[in-house]
Image (tube, rainbow, N blue to C red; front, side, top):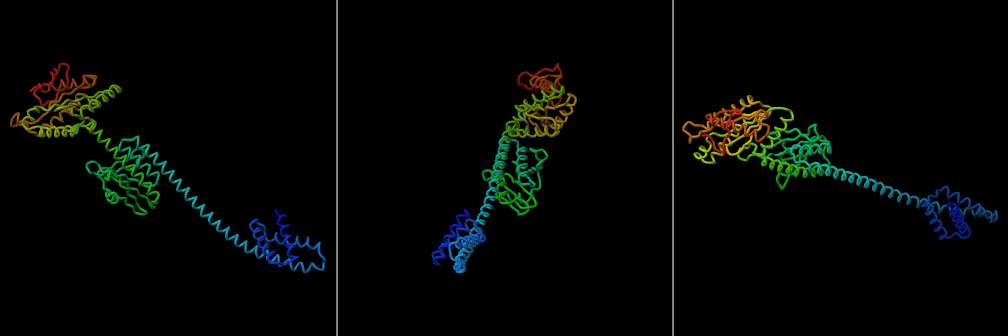
Length: 439
């Protein structure tokens, strides 16, 4: 490549030595631009010039050498001046290109960061929706949401949900990845209360509150706190997660409501017959596995038909509700109370002998009697009372049906012995015939 430029320069110098024209100088300036673009330096041009002069000196008289040197300087000066101008222009273009390249690199880096953020967002949302999609438990749902937000945004997370009765419940991440600490009837932070309007509440450098909205109804809020402020991307991501969280929480609440309706007797608030039988079967299986004992109590409200006929069914329903509440208030925390049907109730008492169960049953009987629910149809001073029969596993029976029969037989004897008493099952107890109540 260097030989090519040497020959080109020699031809220009030879032409210029013969005729000093502007056209040749113009060609020289064009040559200088090409030399700049090809990276040929000024010292190389001087070397080209000296070598070209040496070749010309061989073909001319020594007397012409001084004049040729002077003429050649005009060409060299033109080339070098053009070279300087072209080089400056080249540097300006190069600098602009470098600046554009740097800007492009910065834009590319920003685009890569944004892409990484998008991938991270999609990954988080995919994992979150996968976990939430397989979870119908409200507490576990709250745990999944708070854990993801805590890990993603490196902040303190509190989830507040408005219960069906209008009370606030707070959920805070626990050591268990899928669990939360639950607080009820709490003091709710002002930003959370403000979020009930349906708009996010953002305090720079302090906290971020996002409402949980489903069908324009606000069911709670996510409250995020950290020392530095949340960026626009973090805010947007948290807002997206809040949308998924609201739907998941609403679904979990609907599931709990359906589950409640499926297991709870609507009139008394106690477990219904179907769920009581399910729990009884589970208790039998547990007692059989660990060779333990437990007792069930069958309760029947004395003369309840007369109460209904005298006071009407509306008052009868109220009496049922009150008695159910008294049963629940006077049994132990481990005991299970259910409505068996009509005016009958069942209490399952785990790890309890007949003697121990008698103490619990007697406490329930007295509480109902002392409640003073008048049954005027039976007399001016008569009150609603209950008769109670007890059956114990495995002493009295080893299956659910037979255990209920044992307690029912003991209840029959309690009725036969004057009502408003507790009776423990005995093998000699008579059983009731059909649904007829002993009066």
